[in-house]
Length: 384
Ligand code: DWN
Image (cartoon, rainbow, N blue to C red; front, side, top):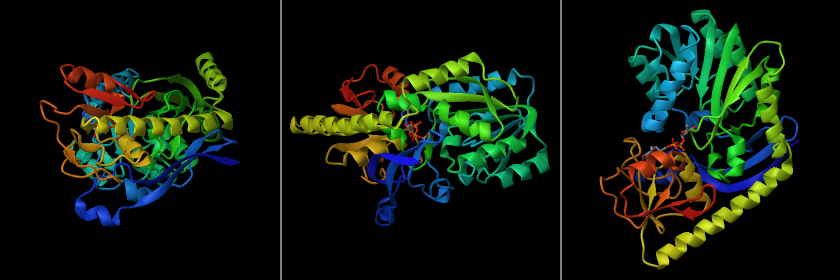
């Protein structure tokens, strides 16, 4: 049975930054979140057709921060320590990970043609298609099977996740490793980080839910770890061995059970915290404006699209958003249409809402001489 527990209202595509001419045709959908009492998977109630989100206009570039570039460099070094494995990356974006692997040993899958063209130019065979069992069969025919299948911030975007895991089984050789990472549900719940729910994130994973889904696809989880990226991620290591999960995996499942991630009551409590977060943010922003102070946004993230639309925070509160991504600059944020501009060397404002809160450390260190304050909603509404 699937139980809806959170309603974030009408939302646009979180990553679809637009021009003024595009305002009139903007797409909106009902953003609601549900819990499956059988698989324990947390998913959106209404999926948006993938072609609407992941196409040649996709704006998010994974190389946008040093934190992520370092993370993927280190991940590639680690995977290479298994010898010279043959690697398939699903969701290769602008090549920030695969660029660290010899093109002779790597194949990429990336449905957004703008990014697929980048990795092709870098010398990688790239399939600009969605990840399916048919594509997996085709890749095996053309390249054989792989030692490692790696996916970062990709599997949680795939709506038919069971089919996606089955497809990985097709391309992975029998001794192979399937390693993937996505935002971690436990961190979302602990931090009231409700902005991790948006059109692209079809699911937010717990280990409990992945244990069930991976088992159905012929995998066991042999290791887990928790990269400090994207506000707290879960990295799963799975293989095809018919063996017992090691202690670390069962003990983390025990921790999740301690947080009751297998029970609907946890999600209902989370939904109450989300409603409070919205009221607290609206109250704070109103107070700041009544003092005649100004507020900007820092980082035009997909996550901030959710916050601005759910909390009805438009240009009445936020003058503009600064963002380093050239493809977003000169455009407007989805739904509430706040202008996006490149950051200036010296930022002049009284407050900046930290849309890119997942890069808090990198940003605080970059802005250590600031003469403005940050506002964040994670783990609760506060001023930094
Ligand atoms: O899964 C997804 C993750 C990995 O990335 C996608 N579905 C979409 C995207 O989500 P996001 O847009 O919330 O990602 P980020 O990584 O939080 O976006 C950061 C944004 O902030 C970028 O547009 C760059 C910008 N930024 C900035 O302007 N100044 C980032 C930093 C660190 C900065 O100093």
